[in-house]
Length: 478
Image 1: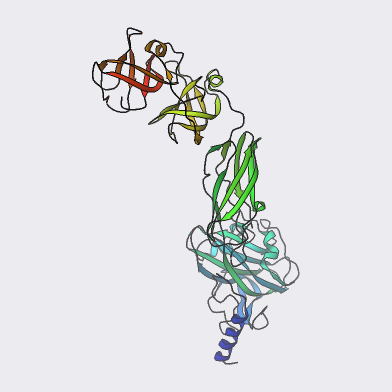
Image 2: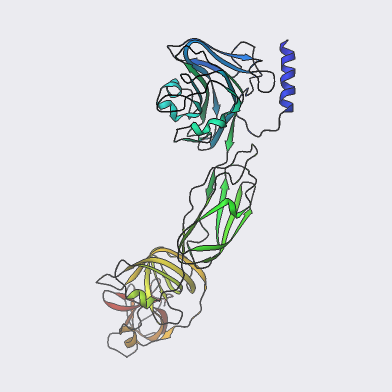
């Protein structure tokens, strides 16, 4: 048959194949090359002790098309062919193909290998390390433990994915750490049995990896909470709550889930009707979606957990607990927000407390909070924030209070409105006196005080404690 005739037949074969989005293998069906020679795009290799080994393009080796690869041994050898493939770092790839054996035997070895990197004979042929790279196959070596049958008919590599012992490979899939992977088709013989194996239709195709983004809020009572879901390529079939595993602790639960597309590779998962007390997170199941090659996605990592609050504790109850207690509060008013600290209080104005840490939201927001109670001996108690989120808004009026009431300690942590004349001014604070006591009350403003001595002012702010004395943290510069 002329070379031109063979090229024409190859074109007909490939035209008849279904569209495949991304097989990265060059000459995957061994249709290119000269019969009786190593196929184009593949390189023969062998162990140094080998003798009598052959890898040839043959018509008898074809599963489909006109040609396939025949590997056979007439002496003793460990050998095969390999092909380096360019890949994208941190992406996952699946190796598959068809093979059959007419003479195999339990003393011989037959390995489908995917190296994470360029060609390396030690990684491909030195036991037991080689088994970290074996996708599928047969080998009686104690580190592999799957002796070969006498023969087998045409079957996909996936038929023996289950023999894989590598911690890096699952179901024919491996993640690339660099920009090269190497496919190795290997057989070996150290006995009188002379194995012959045929290969065809080798494929290395991308597998979608999945990541789940941060939740739309870190804490909730009833939801909704949304998670972005991103695949490394366009997928289909990701459209059902059954594709998502909800992971909870305590009594937390989600009553409703919606899965909706944003793009062909990005989706949104929204949980609603959340109840209970604990945490809730999600992960995307393996094979929840498929790419154009029909490869299912890898299972995602578990998302960041969302704190779920049920019954509301009061601030007064929290203050009565011991230092280091984990506390959860819902529906409290954020009455003051400064850099690194603020105050929250009950909407009914019965009790308030200082909070410290990164504060999201704005003054007058209703907030949900999880944190740790701290009770230092030389200052007021406070909650160290672990999670905080806004949950609507609350509008309340400040309590009217004179200097004596503020200094009594009965209103600590509450939003108040007080008045009087400016007695003295420091860098910050200034002292306000209304005649109800001799000392007056220090007022800490947002910046340098915008008042003068003798001015009559009205101040709205929250009562705190500094060095054992009550102060008012003003909501403004006055």
